[in-house]
Every structure is written in structure tokens, then in C-alpha cells.
Amino acid sequence: MIIESPEKILICGFGSMGKKYYSAIQSLWKDVDIGVLCSSKRNLQSIAGIKMIYDQMENALSWNPDAVIIATPANLHLSQALASASRGFPTLIEKPIGVGNESEQEWLKLLDLQEHTLVYIGYLLRQDPGASLVKDYIRSKELGELIISDFYCGSWLPDWRKGKDYRQSVSAKSCLGGGVLHELSHEIDISEWLLGPIKIISSITNNSNTLDINVEDHAIVLAKTQHSLGMTIRIDFCTFEAKRIYNFRFTKGEITWDLIEGKLVITRPEQDQEVHYLFSGAQERLLRQLEDFWLAKWNPSTKMCTVAEALTVLRRISEIQQIACS
Image 1 (tube, rainbow, N blue to C red):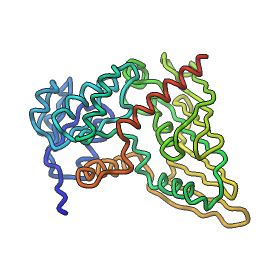
Image 2: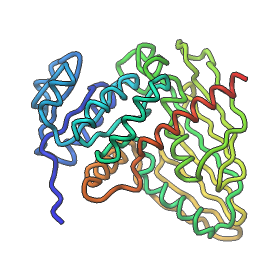
Image 3: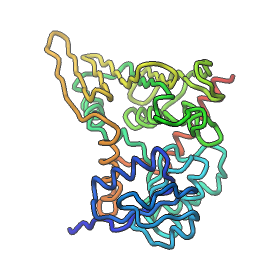
Image 4: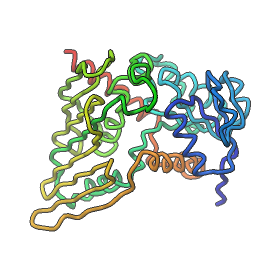
């Protein structure tokens, strides 16, 4: 089988995530031509690899790219994804897939388009080798039955985008897909991908008033799943220092996975710890995700997040919000 490299890729949006996708594309395919859909040209002409700059989606798609990456604010994702997928372009949508107030009929159109056009959503923790290791241990039951799981991710929002006022960022505006539940929905997706469908028992969402924003900056979720009797998701972007640690306690051992350190530790009673050193960093996961996305043209991916799965994440966010308010 001959697998061709892409010749032209369109990036919709050139903010923080758009720039990360640009860097990843340049690392993977040095000769690819990159087009950018952006409301402001901001001297993009001088950036290596950027061949075309557009301010209208229709004109950008007329360039006939080999793939489209949507990295605009989440409130634009659905309309841009429909425009791209309806013309048959493989489409990668940065998470979250939307903000939750979109038309159900429009989502059904996108689900239908995915039947014959590649449409995936960028929940890239699935591409971390630690995710496959954890999944294998859960399935094999080598450590016994899984009893309790905890997914923690905490960070300081002002550190996310250096040189930009965090109060003016997408993360601080609920209408654009901000708030900790949407911005850190990776934890919702990866917990469901590893453990099966989530049943939410209770939740707390709050604004700590630590930051000058009007969205929730931390959330705690208690749930149970097919593979875990008890599960917690704890996320925030109002604390120092950045940590992303998942813990899985089994009847015969424990797994601690530190995603920032790139280390997964397996502990068994009366045995030496088994340590796996994995790659560390979101950019490396992004590279793997882009590879999986492109290769899915020839070999459908089992790790990429589908439209249906991403919509499940949106429903979970809505459930968490409703339970927290009850």
C-alpha cells in the first residue's frame, strides 16, 4: 500500500491551537503547503510554509486542500465542519466539538457526513501510549478488578497563552466554548474511552474568584462506569502548579500515570514498582494525532474521537452542569 503525504492542508483559525497545528504539520510534512483561514492576516505571509491566506470559508475550501483542521473558537466548529465535510474534505476538529447550544438537526447532518467522509475530533490524550497501557491492564485484569479511578488536571489559566490577556481568551468566555468543563473536557473523554460509559452521580462546579473571569474555573465529578465502581474527575485552571495525574486502584495493585512527567508507575503488593517512561508533552501527542488522522484515509483509526463520541462529551458536560445546579 502506498501512503501519500498531504500536499495542501487548510488550518481554520490561527490562534494558540492553530499555531500548534501549524508547527506539528511542519514537523511531519516539511513540503506541505499550508493555507490559513483567519480574520486578521497579521503578517502571516512571512511565515514559512503558509502559501494561502483567506478570510472567507468558501474561498478557503475552493483551494481544494487535502485536509482541513478546524482550530477556531468552539462556537464556529459546527458550521465550518459542515462546510468542509459536505465537500468531502477529511476534517479534524479541535475539541470541544461545540458549545452545547447548536441545532440537533445540524449535528445529525454532521453524523451523516461522517459515514462517508473522515471527520474526527482532537481529543489527543488517546494518542498517549499511557492510555493504551492503562486500557490493556483494565482489560486483562492482571491487577485484578478496578475499584476506584481518579482523573486530576490542574493548572493556572494565565500561564496558558503567554503574552495574551487570559481574560480576553476563549477560555474565559462561555459563548466561545470557555470554562473549565469545555476547556479540560479531555478528562471526560479519556475517562469514558478507558472505562466505558459514565453515569454521573454528583458534581460541583464553581468560580473560585481567583481569576477575573465569569466562567467556572474548577469542577469535581463523582461517577461510576462499566469498569470502575467509583470514579472522580477533578479539573481546574485556577491553581499552581500544573499537574495532570490519573490514578487507578485495583484489587491487586495500582497504576499512577503522570501525563506531564511522562511516567506511568505500576505498584503491586510486595514487589518492586514497574516504571514506564513515556514521551511527555502535548506537542508530541499532537504529532501522533495528526499522523493517525491522515493515515485513517487508508486504515480507519481506533483511537481518533468520532463525532458521536465527541457529542457524548458535550452531553456529559450538560449533565454535570445540571446536577451541579440542582
